[in-house]
Length: 276
Image (cartoon, rainbow, N blue to C red; front, side, top):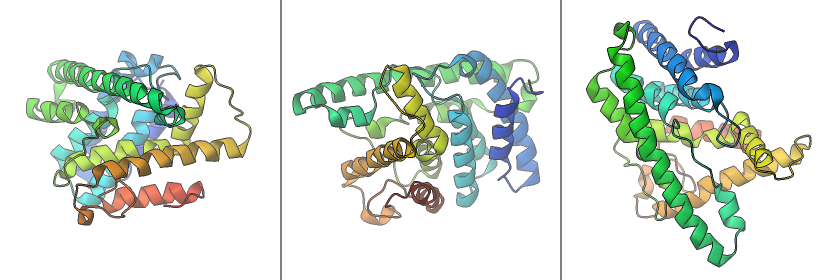
């Protein structure tokens, strides 16, 4: 185990995520904060997460995405601390996930039922996650060595408010993140990028295996097909946001409203040979 109570592979992901922070003082503060929080998250739920839920690497990849976007957007230290807390805590309440591609494969009658079930489970996931994150962050901030966290009650509430809406774009009808909220966009886009990351694609394939589906992991086309399905989910979700001004978006066919979020999306789309 590493010095911050994380397995070494997770500690490496954490350090790589933090490496994009250019301000030395911010990096010092965020390193202490994320090490303490990531260790607590690992002990509380990440360490015993199963493939049916998600990959144990998910939070660390989202953290890396969030810090890249935050740096590019010029977010301040408080906003970055909230984004870090969001990344490490947003999926702390597990659910029996229904994948959007499964909904697309259902017939017309079943699709309505599946959409209703997705709504129910996602609301439970978001609200339960906000409550659980609030408890964890509050306990850490008031426990031994609280100075290394330095997260205020106001920052905790801001983080939990973001967790409570982070999957609202998957609801029927979808509820977009406001374009004017730079921190919310940072957190949202960091999470939305996960399914195109190779570890995100692997997580979906492993989830399918864990649910009893036949998946041939040794065929490259299976991985590309899964990446295509994951990208399709993002593209189809964009149509539910047609009431938002077109000028808010970097590209007309995708959800991204930050240049960095879109550049990461394009990078992974190119990696999988997918049209943006």
